[in-house]
Length: 584
Image (spheres, rainbow, N blue to C red):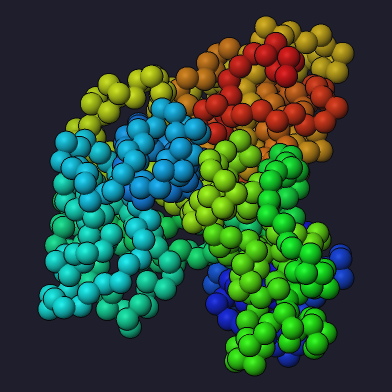
């Protein structure tokens, strides 16, 4: 089924105006279509000459989702806020050894959700980072964008004094991480005609790091239902960069997520958005907002109401489209602000006349529902509005993990592996590492099975009694391969390139597919486990792209509906027994 893309989303992806995108359709530059709901737009498959769309159609998102760390990579995060960036990096596999934040409520939020995190509350200017020198792999921070001074002539580190970027740079100088990352608003890229970024470039050079060409990432391309853009700055220490180590930016998700994805169960969340507190409009404002249609703004009001609501702004130039703005359920949200009911930046619920609630705000930023925020309503809205979307951070984090895996693979003697695991042993068992598929291929060539259950082949599985003592492997199914599993007729499952060593392959008997956004429902028998290649199932894949292959046979549907579970290993696998599954 083709993937529908509204004119608004096409404009956002290409950085053009809505009027331009609509003109493309009306003039026939690209075919204008109507989807099943009667809305006009485009099919992504017919826009292959538009680079962002082409990237989404030919993405390696599912492959990259399986990226897992070869070991525990330690990190420090500055300006941590309520934890959007920290959580995304944590999910990717980084282990935070220190997080710094000056806002007391944000610190309470971090401690409440991750009591094991070392949250250092206070002014960054007062922190000495030298005790961490040589002990931290990665440093990150969304430094607030203060005004830069251009009094200096070199445009280097000295010219950043008085800004919070200088404090991030000082932390880099004192810690000497292998890689560091800064994130900021898109406007920093062009601030003062690019001179601000030039100063940052020169400062990074002085620190002894090579800057990856900065990039503005659009959150809507990374499974975030929000039109948020962030400038990402990544730098690699020169001694590592000279060895040929390079960073690859994350591939995008294959479609644009909307508020419908955020508020209801599906690809993003397993359940509908829970009830929570939220601001309310005063009666006068509620009366005006009730007149605004879904996706509309002040221009949809009668002229008399426009003049009364807008006041002096009515006679000023510009579209002022943030005023009296109601969001659309089938579009991503506008960029969230620190308050959803400010007159200049309204964020009204699509179908109800009220501002977005705390949990709706959090979902748009892709925080999980169990991530709690401390403080009063204003504090919570501020923390969420200032955050980096978790899924965007998670995608960047996976690309950074891949970079660190490359660094360690090239120079394992410099990986600090032993030192890191002294602290990490309680969080990540030393025995958990990825299986080398090339080694497995030598040990188990194609004609040698790791698992061979001939009895399963001969029995009628629907009548076979379940053995709840047997091991069952729960595996995430990538979206692109999901249909046979939802139809209960899947015959094979092949893993990603990485597979955890802790799974007891010789004890596996059952298999359960995990459907993202839903959970588990169906039970399969594992007839054979063997080493194969992705090329067997995807023709364009390399012939030596070795994978672990399970030949499976549907046994029965265990539950009337899908049951949510947490995947325990790398957020991809759970190795358990059937008894534990049946007690869910």
